[in-house]
Image 1 (cartoon, one colour):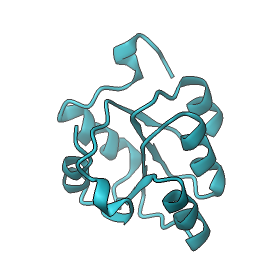
Image 2: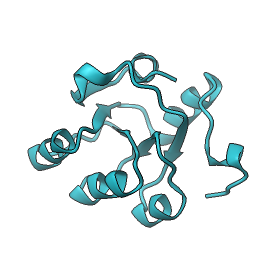
Image 3: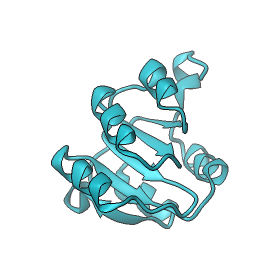
Length: 120
């Protein structure tokens, strides 16, 4: 699924990576525990989270995740946005709760880790 479609579907604002919304992501993962993402995250995914710290950016880099969507109307501070830009990460912001965010993406065909036989 293209990130532009995700942006529109989630009524999201783009704060990093505006020029890369034609990029495709293959999976979605959602967590506020970065240890779960480190254990189960897959490359070329979008991470949905409400966690607001630099660890999210570090975890995305380690896991080769291409995009992050902060849920529940949370807004990252300038340090997080700067780190995302420095690491070529696309960052979206949505006011939707995580459950609805996941549901909208799943309904439109974005697969999760269960598709790979992994439970998170």
